[in-house]
Image (tube, rainbow, N blue to C red; front, top):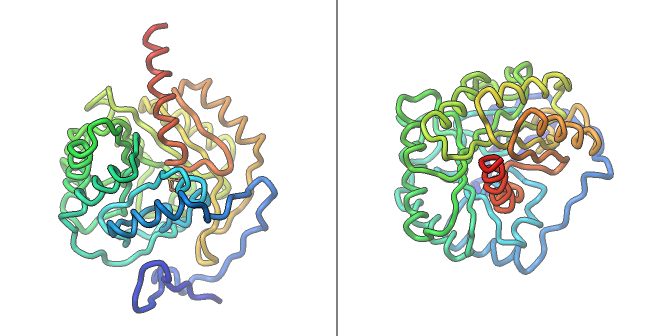
Length: 320
Ligand code: SF4
């Protein structure tokens, strides 16, 4: 049995996921040929890394061990994770550190805005850990971060990837009022896998959250994503598409789940590129404005280019 220590951020060393220490190890099947990523060693990657470190920022790219980091950081695309590096939930798929987080850093919104400016980002993605310990779930901090970026970089479009705010009253409304350009909230998996994969969340609450964003501000694009390879059936994925469309969600992402450590949920299956292409075709037929479905699709992968396509798709729909 292995114990996974936090070598990314912790001093002294501590288990990165204390709640998973006593779980049995599970080993996923070897990765197939179609899951290949570039090693992170380019000059652009090093420059992005320096800006992240200088501004003491946390990125989901590092914390989640994202396979696309070499490609994204080479192009100066980093996804900032606000409100610390420690999550109050303990999802079975996620590599973000778990435990009791520190108090919020009130200067963080300005540091994020500065980094966005230094990186020259036309489109930025901001996500966060779950902060169930905060009275507003972190809604005010999200809103302040959006405000700081708007002030420092008025031409930059802003995409947020939020937790569910644990149904805290007024939290969602406060974030929507800050007017992000894209509001993303991931379902992560099909409803039958929630108890095992995402036990702290409720599927229909997440659907309702996305629907509510559109009701509050129809100009905001809404987006959601799932991972496949966690034991779901194809018909369940198709049902998720219908549920998201019933909430008027614009953009769907589907990517292959990869196991971060032996303590995390096992990969049950590697979905083939052809199956991903099939999901993409079906999703478009169900009315999504944008769909990205491939083994290495992640919520924030190519987010800038995809935002431009979203705008074009909406404009085409309006003029048809
Ligand atoms: S896909 Fe998203 S999380 Fe992964 S490296 Fe790119 S920006 Fe970061």
